[in-house]
Image 1 (cartoon, helix red, strand yellow):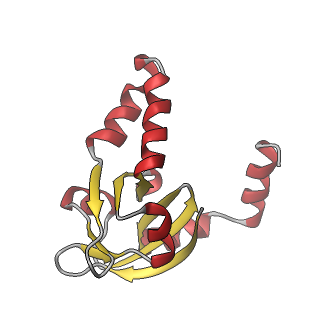
Image 2: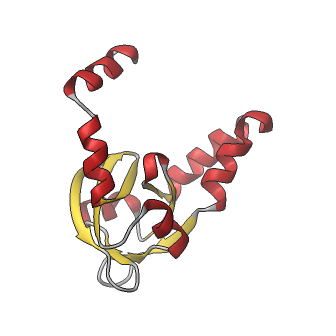
Length: 139
């Protein structure tokens, strides 16, 4: 399970170190793609295949925009010897990744955020809004 919050920096080539605790679950090769709320999603190959299968089972009329959003921008990345990945420029642009990034584990995926966007998003999540969401979901 992917958990935790980690601060890192992009280097001049667009590479970022993936925390070792997350590398264990993501694997040597994994998929990154556009995520929701202006971040990037990172999935292990196994989890990516599960997600792709679920989307494949949906009617095309309901899933075509999800397919375009997730699959068109997806890239398979590989860890280098220092535990870094190169984030493609189109994905860096989408997520506003310039220098400081936050990588968070959120169950079966990791998210890669610009630090500024992550801090702003976190200000919007209050204990009350989390409690309301949990209640709505039956927790």
